[in-house]
Length: 197
Image (cartoon, rainbow, N blue to C red; front, side, top):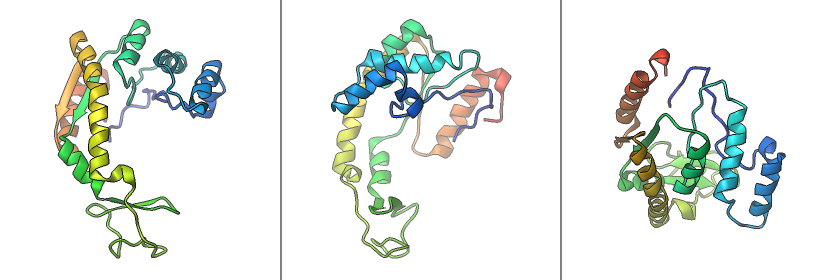
C-alpha cells in the first residue's frame, strides 16, 4: 500500500453511490441513470469528479481508478491537467491464479483464499462450517472475460496519456517488486514529499 503525506486528498473516485455526491444536482442526475439500469454518461461522471476536486483545490490530490475510459480522460483533460499517470501491469495469468483461489461464505460475506487465507477445513466456513462457494465472477473464465473487457477500455486510455507524455508503466507479478519502483518514481517526481510514502 502506498502511504502518502497527510496533505494529499483522495477524492471519492466516482463513487456515485456516496451520499454526499448523490445529494448534489449532478449526483441526482447520475442516480436517475443508475436507477434506470443505464450507464452514467462520461460527461456526468467527470462533472461529479470535477465537483469533488473543487473541494480540494488547494491540496495536492490523487485519483485512483479514475478516469476509466479515454472519453472520461478527454473530458477531464479539458478542465484539469494531470501531472502523471501510473499504470501497474500484471500478467493475466497471475491475476487469474490469484482470483480463482477465492472462495466465499455467502451469508456472511467472509472471503477465503486457498493459498493466502485458507479455511481451517477445505471448502468450509471457519465459523459456521457452511459450504464455501466460488462466485461466478471469480471463476477463471469469468476473470479472463473481465480482463479482456478491461484491456479494451484501458488501452485507448493509456494511449491518450502516453501521447501526452505523462504515462509511467510498471510491470511485475508481486507488490514487493513493483512497490519499490513506484516509490522511487514518486520520490523523484515529488522531491518535497520524499517520504515516507
